[in-house]
Image (cartoon, rainbow over all chains, first blue to last red; front, side):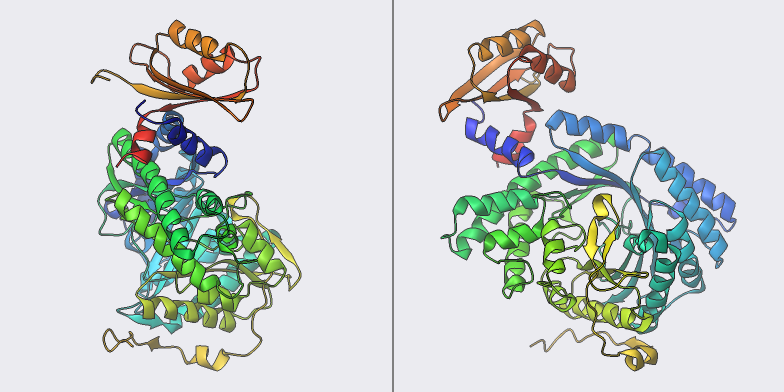
Length: 454
Length: 95
């Protein structure tokens, strides 16, 4: 036969037991032609464009999932950063357009829309300030519009005023969504060196170098990788483990490539890219932490976690790059605490701390992700945590991000419950040592040196 | 398989019983789906596993409809039936 029994059964097993799925099919839509100084006109143009481009997204994704027997978990939209679309420095204008986006997303049946975004790595414009001023209200009163702010790049350095501003904004968002453990903060990502073709939420936005509209696919499959390592048994050396990860990543990527090409064809847009990230969900067996455990760590966060994660991240890329010519986005392993069963457990027993997580983010995408901290954490401390993560991204020429939730009224030992894909998380301890005077200095940390790198 | 073919892979896994192949083959024929190749094995002592390549170019049914017909044909047995476009296996297992 064209395919052996073993090959067919391997694929079936990957889907049924390894939880192989296409994590997201995200339609990128440029809004550059929707700009209008009249907020109502701008909102109308944005809404019409989302509906025109995205109305068939869900239907076609369901069709493709049925044809290939590959589940497509999420359908999403990413948009041009809104700071480039709304040309007026008025928070009310941003609120009006954001509400239109949220409703349009609901109409076409997507669960998240990304692009409430400002890029302030070197400073803010009056428009950026208006966008950020409206952000707490937007995140508290809309369901699916996700925000991101670029605070640092390797070429610009770190905007420390921006870090401090966002520390205060995060506190405000948490307060406004206090009845849901500060869930608004789960829809805000702060970036160093973001990619412009990321299909994953909450940090997706559609960069200005992208074409009119394209399909961005995020594959997943930590369960498939774990099963492949399990099959090797405990005696295989790490070179063999890396080889097994590469082979599985190749197959996962091929599945994503097929879905991406087909979706692009059906929607009449280009196939933008395939993001090779291993993205966990709270579901049993769909965990990046469990991959580390299968490698031989008792829990994620144990000594050796950074080394294991570096190997995993690298092997996934090596396997995936050969499988597709359209690799882009973040392409690495995600370690969001609240969205990964094994990470939740490790955080609960104190096996993983914010400091260890920070170290691990230097070798994987993306950063401190879905970390819940005491509600009493100050804006200055949040800003300092953000700055540390931005520094890792800047110095290492990579994307790093922070998605942190100071859960109102919660403290160590408590849990936050967001439900669905966002999961639940124990409150993690934050250092009590003050960084207040450092943060209050403000200004910009200059771009790091690009040579003499030892 | 010629240019005018639409190949699918049918996978049937579950508890072994008499006549599974016959029931699936009949259901496929009744819906104008032509079998190209079959692999069938008993794993261990009692797990039935069959993978089958077929052409659905002459069938008017959609893939979910074919799946439903096949499931119906073996509904009294404990079997898991999956139907997928063969391209997914081409992509994942062939460079």
